[in-house]
Image (tube, rainbow, N blue to C red; front, side, top):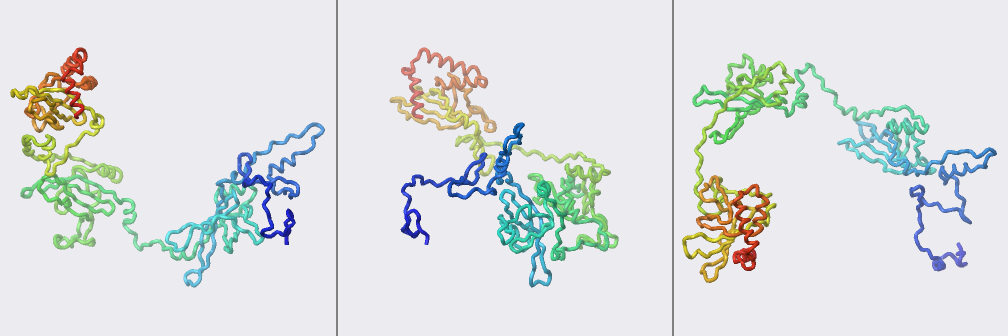
Length: 561
């Protein structure tokens, strides 16, 4: 039994005591920094401690001890300065040696194979002497592949030694956990590193072929008679490549016949032809554009098969002597296809490039074609405005069965949001009851709409408030097709504005109207600006806004709106 030397008691639970004189209770530091790199802490040799072994010293420290020699008679020797200390995990960071090899896996209870040859890749990480073994993944192999051995230090023998990069070479057997891996070759970086360290690599070895995979490999195709053309090559090289010709189907010799435009498409992948009609709107024809479905067109039929009616019996490939090819489609000539005449008058750019490359001897002769011009129908007249809703909304009911809202200028709405021009006006009417009525015109710059507010007049007998909601006011005499609406340029002091058969005379405006119109003076007539300057200039000098009744009306209208 061990004895507690501090107190002379047996070292048993309950006989040990905490050192009350201990003042530092922090966790000791386990890392020390050298040249800016973190390294494990090495305690100094003290009394009663074992001496520091030479194997624990770094190479720079050993060189420092060897350089401390006595001075010579004629001076001291000059030694080269020691290199800066760099730990291994920094010097060899991301430096990996890569070897290639294989191992043989025995297959039991199979009459078709005795073993499998499975290739592997061995990675050796120089920073911590660890290794990992990977097997390249083969699709649909049925074998679990990928990482065979995760990254770790691989044991070399039973004594606890581990594999080092000095133990690796090409053409050797590497035994890891009972599996023998044969190293066949390595990459160029690994070869340069091993040769720089003084290790000579053996010659590379070829990886043996797996007999099971070799037996399953299908032999190449052999033909007794050579084929005329390789259809597989034609599919791989000509897929999605189409020659397009613009033609006219000429059947004017028939009753009510005409020349109708069509498009002939020649598919290079299988030498098939498709003819499509070009339908015009309101032509009265059925909307079926395919005139001839995609198929190979026979050019010459064997003489023995000509008496058979082709309209009843289909022509088989054995009866066709020759099919149409790209050489038969020449722009500028008339082509006979399935008993119909087609005038090829033009083609697209891809077709022109194809003929210049593959058939330079064929000359393309595009022809100008005068297309049939349809007579213009009488234009429908738009009915007069009925007064309900805005003019744009009413016009949409005449343009489409399901009316759509008119489009708005979004940028104008964002730039001129909350910008309003206000004018004071009086009604110009022959009725003596309308003589004292006063109104406020509000012009909204974001939507070009105008709202009219009627001011209250004591003992007038007329209800004040909103006279006209926000709407665009057209000028008198304009048409529904080309309407003209009132704008800031039409509002001059003293002018008469007609609003839906009501006449108003503008009498005043606020200062913001003059400030805004001066910023766009190049877009306005000088008469409008002069009238505002004359009216507001007199108001600024002679009229007090607290006593002017028109200014008070404008302020009350602004507060109520």
